[in-house]
Image 1 (cartoon, rainbow, N blue to C red):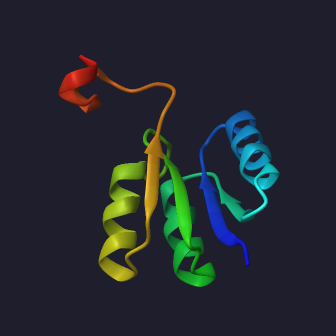
Image 2: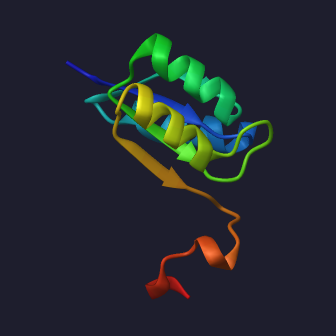
Image 3: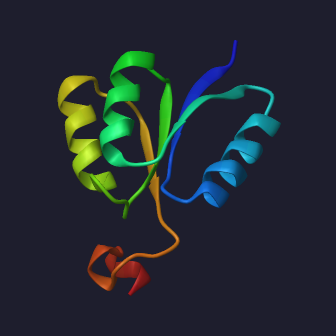
Length: 95
C-alpha cells in the first residue's frame, strides 16, 4: 500500500521535480498537486493525503497559513520546505 502525497508549490518546476522524486519511491504516490495554500487546504480536506509537502512562500495563501488551517481541520503530517526563505524563517542553527 502506498502513502498518498499532496505536493504543494507555486513553481511548476518544483512541483514536477518533487513529484518525480516521490513517485520514484515504491511506497509513495503523488495523488495531486496544489499551486497555492488556498488550493492546498481545499485538496487536503477533500483528498485526505497521508502526507503533504508544502512550500513556504506562495501567492494567494502562504504555506504557514495553509498548515495552520489544515492542522486545525484535519491534522496531517506536513513537510515544509522552500528554495527561497527570509532569514527570520530559518531555524537558529541555519543562521
